[in-house]
Structures are given as C-alpha cells and as structure tokens.
Length: 266
Image 1 (cartoon, rainbow, N blue to C red):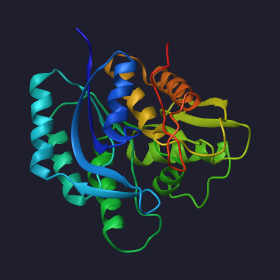
Image 2 (cartoon, rainbow, N blue to C red):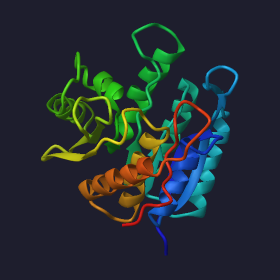
Image 3 (tube, rainbow, N blue to C red):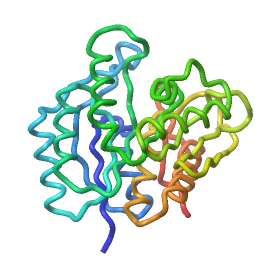
C-alpha cells in the first residue's frame, strides 16, 4: 500500500506554490497526497502580482482534516500557509486531537517587522499554538532570523547557530534554508536535530528566488518521512528535488518563475 501524507495549506491557483505544489511533490516522490485547504491565494495581475487572500472557514478546514484522516491512515502531515489566528486555532485543535508521528511545519511568517496588527497577531499565534506541535520545521532566512531571535544571519555559520537556537527553543528538527540570500556560489541549507549539524549544499541557480521552492522542500521532507525515511535522509532528498525543480523551472508571465518537480528522479 502506498504511504499517504496530508498537506494543510493554501491553494495557489497558478500551480506554482501552496497545496498544488505539495501534491505534485508528494506524487513525484511516490507518496499519495491528501489536502486540506486553509485559504485561497491568487495573484493579482493588475497590481504587480500581489497576493489576494481569502481564508477558508475554520469549520470547513477541520472537516477536511477529519475527512482525510478518516479515509486514509495518515501519520505524517505538512503545515503550510495558515494566515489568520482563527485558522491557526482550528488547525491546532485538529492536530491536538490526532496522533501524528511527524508534523512538518513550513513556518510561514507574514509580519516583516514588529508593527502591531493582524500580521503580528497571526505570527504570534503560529509560534504559540502550531510550533509546539511540530516535529520538523523548514524556516527560510527571514523566518530563521525571527524564530531564533538573532539580530542577523550573514553566513552559513550564523544560519547553523539559528538552527540550533530554534531547536533548543521549540524542540524540533530544523532544516534552515540559506537559499540565494547568503553570499557565496552555493545555496546552503543547514540541518540540525540536536546531535548533528549537516550542511546541504548545491550551486546557486541564478540569484533570484523561485516561487514554490519552500513549499517543495517541506513537502519533500513530508513525503519521505511518510515513507519511513530518517529525518536527515528526508532532508537530503528534499534538497535534491528542490534543486531539480529550480533547474527545470516553469517560465511565467510574472517577474518570477515557478518550480517544476516533474523531471526529478532518484
């Protein structure tokens, strides 16, 4: 029987990120994918591709999780875009009611400063209610900075220190993404599980981010953990499929391209 993984994430209509990308990644890695949508995100072509965001009703989110876990035996779940405190409360409640072995969190933080308001409220709710339930987190540069409490992350060594601090604070396995942000010819991610620090490196492919790379990484970790892989092996596979997905990117009419997982083979 094929292993099943659940993604709890937003829908991104163009197919380059969100639950659509998660399901493609699950499929490419031989894992059956199930999805509970938390919001509908669509790019606005009339306003520089800004995100239009519509949350799904909390009860509907819980209903989807209930349905997926009733239909399938699922012990591995990926959490992506949540977006509101009400959504976070609903997802946290559903997670707490179930015995998931792996909860992979792509900690999507939307507040870029300490300003008061909905963005900060949402980020605080994520840290308070979802992070304590996670077993594995995949923060990008900004998220690693925020979750670690560090003033700056300028090097791979800084990123490794951030990963250690996040692990110590939240008791989670960390795969911190350096991507194209850090200087140097390579895109370096740092894995830390409390015992070992491992740098996962590949040559940079351009100097700009590609839509869906973060979703792909977390989804690949999820798919591999669902199949029984050890966390470090799951991280290695995730790095490989992200690299392939960026190399074989889908060109778009936007200022950014989208990942394409369909070429990757182990």
